[in-house]
Image 1 (cartoon, one colour):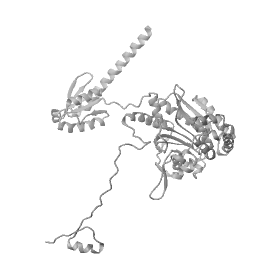
Image 2 (cartoon, one colour):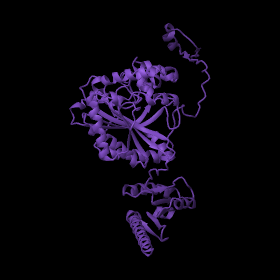
Image 3 (cartoon, helix red, strand yellow):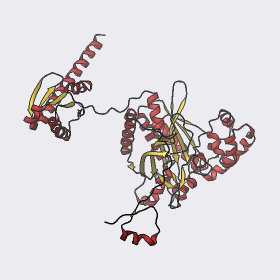
Length: 482
């Protein structure tokens, strides 16, 4: 018998010798450091979208999908992560998004990347990369998903938030601007929001904007000491952003500032004039807001925001957009006019709740499947699948033990038909089908189950229609008497 020795640590030269002698090597692990305690809560500025909020999100998703199809948009999904310079060069290094709000990091491979802070730059990149310039114009693209900004969280704003995004490429006619605004109005209307107003302005093109910027700086330099600290810094980097400041003192100071529409080039002026004529023809609610500039460097000509108001006159921004005719060319593509807008889904849902808009209602299951006993459970799984395949929306409570508790669930959900399978039914391949409206019931074989359930549902539907018609007739007769 070979006596085995235990070795804790050996050098490489003795490994073969140890193997021959039957030496067993035991690795000794160092005691792990105390692990950080898991804190079961989300990061600041992030949140879970809970089941009770999902009906609102579902209504938004359905409206966006339906509207995008009606207006001829095709879905595109771009990566959450892009090269950092895609945003720093196109959005502008002096904007708040790039200066303070982007999530940036370096990958293991050394690439500088960022979580997307908006959709437009990424979609423009995809437009060029995949050769979409050869497609019939306009090219219409729709996106829906999360974007990220390291902003100060506040009501309705998060560091991870969702946007619905619409982009049109290849047309510079002002009628496309009007159609884009018409689409935005249609979406918010279909979401049940009523007190909607569009804030509209034109900021021209970079050439004409230089003269406007000079005039604005001259005006603001005289007011420098009265500006907030952020706006003093913006004065030398991005003076037009001062017009968008929410500080009361800055709002008052810029009330008499030069207006961008007074410095428009002839083409931008004509474009804006035609846009307003189209909006008047469509009878869309808009206000010319000469303070509106939007926060991104790539915008040209038309800019707009979508506002919702309350009875006290308070305004809530739901999203916005504008034209960016030089963006694709700035990225190395061919000169391609473009316009688009984004809706802030989180803000939209907050407004839906504030104005008590009804969320989407999932179709209600009209049939409930109850079972008792192990054999009945096995049979129920197959029957459940069979009913679903035949278009019958069905609910169940397989985890509940007693038939009584299952029937309570059926009553609570207002089921019109309850299917009951017990030990006897499981052995006979039958089921008890109970009409919860009339109270009648019958035992049917499995092959006739779908037919029997559909017959009861159809009969109940006809009864409901008759009751509604009788009620309407009665109301009409009462109105005539009055």
